[in-house]
Length: 501
Ligand code: NAD
Image (cartoon, rainbow, N blue to C red):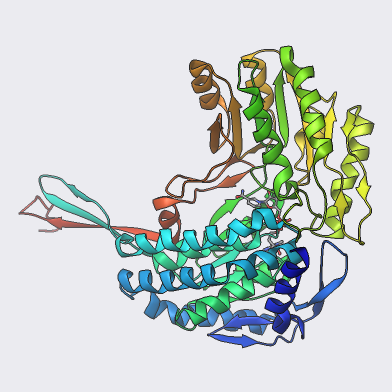
């Protein structure tokens, strides 16, 4: 099965890897003339292919294509946009296995999770496709003298910049609402895992999405990404990535007053009270940090455990962590795969020393795993830590969990909120009053009570503090990709002051 999945990924990307990967705009593949960088396979450290950084001319051409196409796509009836996006969803479903295998290949994500990720991407298109016909709907806000009517229109060509952790799903999460709203898109995917984004833009072309509506440029963040965010014809930037990159993008976009939407990092707490269903809480804690190789923005990377159950819970946790199956991401049995890149591997490994220096104990793991030259680390559990330590404060973004004891509800809330981030929080308790109090008190954009992270597309997704600006999901997405206009119709002869009469 593992070999079959690997062959599938290699075959699906053969055409993109036989020469340095270029771009795709105005409905055509563009071979690329900029500098070339290697794309590395996380599971082996081997070179999969190369990728071109877009030149300024190429970036300008892609933006120009999106600007020209906006004139037509923004006026295309919503029902027609819905049909086009549903055709794309059909094609994603048809190619779901190839897409999943490609995510295993260049992002190092495990097959057991990725086999669903492509289907979730298709769902994102279907969900927003259905909303396209009503995207421009507004409100009627009458007064005795005026009928105020609001409506929405797409903001213009938008830049979408995505990270490498679950590249396909995250791209669809941004691109689907933008296209449904009537915007055109220039997408710059992450340079470390670029192949599924190229598959998506080609499928969109095959689905009949008109030329120039959806364009892709490859390249580095500091060159191509930066130029995209600075381009005056790009009206908004939807960005998913690190908090410090979000801050750079805000500066880069300042001169052109760019509208920005940021989904950034997290150091999400999962709070386990003594009265919780501890077996289910344990399952959720382990799943939410060690799935997706810990490279997940909503991962529960800090587990706060009530003192009275701390030692027992940690003991059970340690057994589960030690049992996790690290291995080939193409193998359906693998639970934890490799980290995406040597640079990220070094970052994650550096936290093993940081933990020791700060006085935490490495209860499980703590070492690299030597396997086929890939970037594997042991699933790791830090104990004996406190919330001021770097392993409790900083986003490590690997299969690494920090356990922290708390004394009571107030202490749990204080520790949970005492970080710069505020993306997600998880609360485990059978006491309903406490569940309500704690979930209200958490500084987070999203809280799950007695639950792992289960997404429902109409609900808002996003973070507070250093975890983001804005919300995705349902109508929140359209608020970002669209401008609202109010038109006031006078219903009679209201008073107009007569100056100079
Ligand atoms: P990153 O910020 O390094 O890169 C993300 C993207 O930004 C890449 O395409 C990169 O090329 C580009 N980029 C880098 N510098 C840029 C610049 N100056 N201008 C424009 N673009 C630039 O993030 P990453 O390491 O790829 O991804 C991991 C991060 O993403 C983690 O912090 C994780 O929490 C976050 N993330 C957040 C969410 C969420 O929904 N909140 C989801 C997934 C990942």
